[in-house]
Image 1: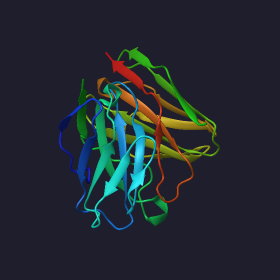
Image 2: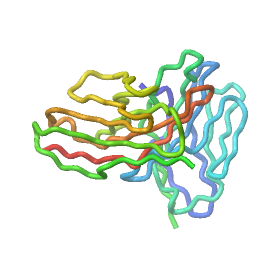
Image 3: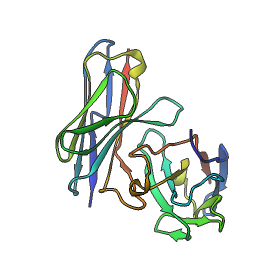
Image 4: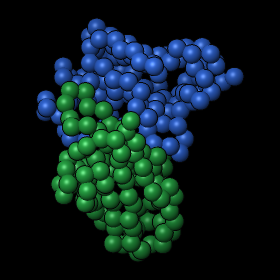
Amino acid sequence: DAKTTQPPSMDCAEGRAANLPCNHSTISGNEYVYWYRQIHSQGPQYIIHGLKNNETNEMASLIITEDRKSSTLILPHATLRDTAVYYCIVRAPLNYGGSQGNLIFGKGTKLSVKP
Amino acid sequence: SQTIHQWPATLVQPVGSPLSLECTVEGTSNPNLYWYRQAAGRGLQLLFYSVGIGQISSEVPQNLSASRPQDRQFILSSKKLLLSDSGFYLCAWSVIPGAGETQYFGPGTRLLVL
C-alpha cells in the first residue's frame, strides 16, 4: 500500500502556480520523497525528490515540512502540458534497508490545467 | 544523455499465445532494470528487477518471466498469455543504487490479450 495521501484531483489556471500537497505522516528518517507524473498513455516521468531540505530544479520545487510529515510540489507556471496524474512516493534508499525496486504508486492527484 | 526504448508500442495478442517485450537503455552502464505493469486505472505493480546480466528477481509469481541477456537489454516473456496479462508494461532503469536512487521510465507497451 502507498504510504502517502494525495487529493484525487485539482484544477489550476494556465500560467498560475500549481501547488500539489502530499501527506506522508508515517515517513521514516531515511525515506526520500519522490514526485513523478504520468501523462495519459505515457510512462511516468520523474520530477524531483528530496529528503529534508527544499529542492528546486527546472521542472518544479519541492517543499518539505520541518517534521517531514507532508510536502508540496510546486509547478511555478503551469501550462496545459502539465495536465497529468501526479504521484507522491516515499522510499528508503537501498543501502539503508530499502526494498529493491518497488516504487509504490498510489492513485495520485489528477491535475487539470485550464486555459 | 540516457534514453530508454521499449517495443512494440502496442500489441494485441490472443489468449495462449507467447509474448516477448523488449527494453533497451542507452547512455549508461550497468543500470538496474525494472519491469512494471499498470492495469487500467490502477497503480504500477513491480514485476521483475535486475541488478546485472543474468540476474533477475521476481516480485510476484505469475506466468511471466524476464531475462537480461546483455547489460542494457531487458526482456519480458510469456509462453502462454492470459486475459489478465492485459495492461500497460513499463520498463525503467536506475543507476547503481545509492541515496535517493531515481528510476526513469520508458514509453511503455500497451498489451491487449483477447
